[in-house]
Length: 89
Image 1 (cartoon, helix red, strand yellow):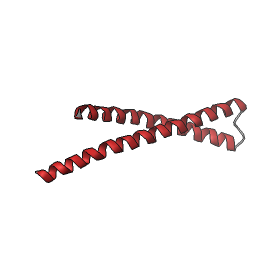
Image 2: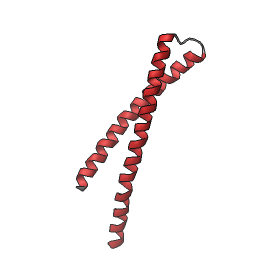
Image 3: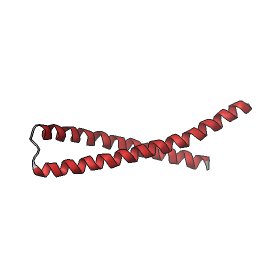
Image 4: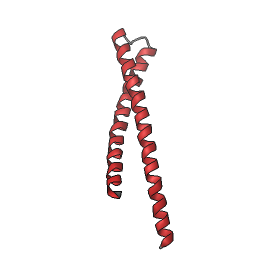
């Protein structure tokens, strides 16, 4: 079972990396659109796109936070088990 958990952590970590790359790309788009908006250069069709991108960014950011918290929880018991093994040795 330990190896299954380790594989799951690796899979989540890889998924997290992909999600963080997507967040980076979305953040760049949002910043560009916000600049356009602040300079009155954002047309009505792009305002809708801006809202969609911002919503996608926010939901992805929540998912990334959840995965990070889950990975932290999974790694903390493993660190505790290793410390106990070192005390026994």
